[in-house]
Length: 110
Image (tube, one colour):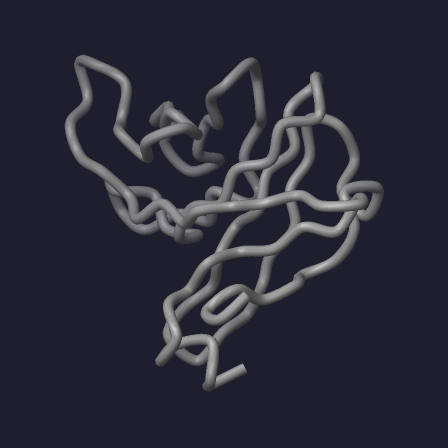
């Protein structure tokens, strides 16, 4: 799986929780919903760069802990009336292992 990195098991993240993957190019927040879906976003709120990984996960969204901006986990878009977007990373879960797609050049750095 060229460009994909394993970051742990789904059970490593509590339901409605998150964990941070630290990479040279910036941190990635990996979220688990109540129904065990996994999403990965850059760990920076589009508003003022707050750590989304420390936010509250609810449904398919996360609320930034700094200024309560709400971000869609599926596409990284801020929920109206706020505007902005955060980078999203493709995720795959196979046999309980979570993998994030970084692209071949970025994965080589890890």
